[in-house]
Image (cartoon, rainbow, N blue to C red; front, side):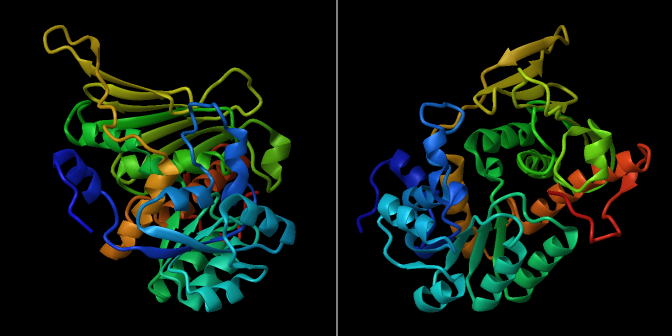
Length: 360
């Protein structure tokens, strides 16, 4: 293969993985295959978001097989993506097809068992959708199994790879807003499902683990149960960065808005990541001034970027953008916020001692 010509082509070329890997999908339903049908014409969701077409679009990986317990979903997967190596047993798929990278998009209930099974079967990397699982004990077991077998475990909170947020992180590193002090989320959704994305993104921006939380849930009845729920919360990270969550799932008219606030400015993401703003401080008046946000030069689907990122993590020998520990922390914060409410709104330290606690 001839070397790409020109500086621009070189820059693009160097962002790709160095090798090509065999890829497979376990779970051929909504996230694995069909979710993009719901998002046609929606600028918030740059195509593709489903794992199968993202694996087809990504450099460095070939989609060669899939598994699902539902034969009907396998038939639809074959029609959509032209994959012939289809299995109702993921273990048989791994044994016969020897995939390097598996996108795991089952429902959360079997995800821990399947993750451990894939790790034991010798796959090199697992890219598992969110929420990671239902209990903290399951999350611990998933991480332990992958560490034991030398498997990269990445959680598909793919906003962590989204190039707009990558540029926002770089702007903060370059001092555009000064020292990051706090983060705020407003969004009408529940804590563990959609906001696994938010909490994993907060963890990446904070650059340190969460150490304690304080929560107020919207419903006493739901707080008493184990299902996912909405509410508000306060998170303190090990390095002193603070975060505020405001979900209010029953409130209409709110969009997903995130703010990253420094001592000299802020970055704001509005309208479910469709609009980004950079605010700095006027050097003479000290007042706020809006600056040109450093837009991505090569914007793409965050899911495609994430899958290529997993390939690069394989080559580097570690996952840094959204490892299993970030997915576990997202679940633990959500549970901790609920536990704070249950204990009459007290501070709850992390990690939680009771690993049997669950959500969803």
